Amino acid sequence: MALTKDRLKGLYFDMVAIRRFDEEVEKYAKNGTVPGFVHLSIGQEAAQAGIVRALKKTDYKFPDHRGHGAICLCGTERKLVMAEIFGRATGINGGRGGSMHINDLEYRNMGFNGIQGSTVVTCLGTAFSSVYKTTDDVTAVFMGDGTLGEGTCHESMNMAATWKLPIIYCLLNNQYAISTHYTESHPQKQLATWADGYGVPNEVVDGNDIQAVVEATERAAERARKGEGPTLLEFMTYRWQGHFSGDPAAYRPDGELEAWQEKCPLKKCREVLVKKHKCTEAELKKLEDAAEEEIQDAVKFALESPWPDPKNALKYVYSSLQVEDWK
Ligand SMILES: Cc1ncc(C[n+]2csc(CCOP(=O)(O)OP(=O)(O)O)c2C)c(N)n1
Ligand SMILES: [Mg+2]
Image (cartoon, rainbow, N blue to C red; front, side, top):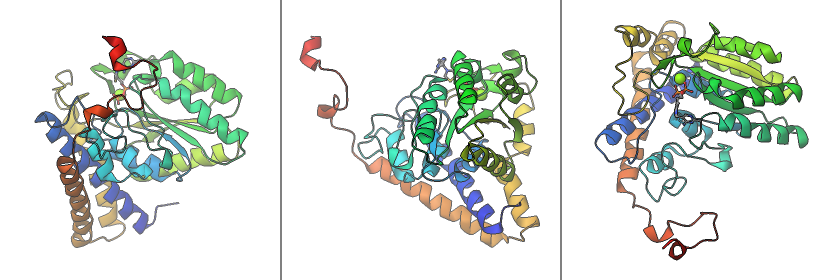
């Protein structure tokens, strides 16, 4: 069933906010304000937003290293995520995690840890807990085309299929793993068919079409809630930036980026809102301005927040050793 006008407007707001959030992160990463490097999901907003918005608050979500958008939509206030990426004490994890290690258990954002393929396995635990406790919470794990090459993906899918665990494998095929095109590292034409080997239903989805993303995720969630087991969804999309904020992406053939920019998820959604739902320019501008205001507030909050106190550096470190012991 087609998404209602109000729901689509909400999703458009989400996608604009995701894009503007990452554009600001990129700006502050490039001028050295954000420590470390960051992975952006500009171009992939429909998959980031559509997957999370198709789920409920108590469903378990495992965003990956390119997951600022999904992380915010789990429920954490944007400014707390921004402050975390800026390494500030007010960040949702006290500035300890930074861009790649953000979790918020209140919203069942289970976090990432930097090891590709690791959460594809640990998500078995939350999925099993739903079965064990007889809740209808599903688990959605984000993974990339490159990550699918990890052996852990096979182990996870084998167990999930055998035990009919409520997992949605959300494979964001953005064409590249760092500089390697997915056709150079996998034999399948469509990676979704990889799940056939485990008898797991799978779909190829236009990952730049917000409506298609929401509907496919809802179908997979419904199967999982009914006890019918895992699904793999391959969302076809593209990252506009390089792999990380400092990568010029020289490995891309001429014209490829521009061709995908034509399929911009925000542009697509905007067109549906205008043509089908008769949204006016003023209506859309209001949403865009509201998103902009929220992002500017988040940046201001992060920039004005204090750095963590070095005295607390070892808090939450699970070791009996004290600093003095290392001398
Ligand atoms: C086990 C492991 N191997 C290698 C890396 C280095 N690494 C970080 S991201 C990445 C590519 C991931 O590609 P993909 O899964 O397609 O996700 P994308 O970055 O395209 O979103 C690699 C190889 C890592 N973090 N973990
Ligand atoms: Mg990729």
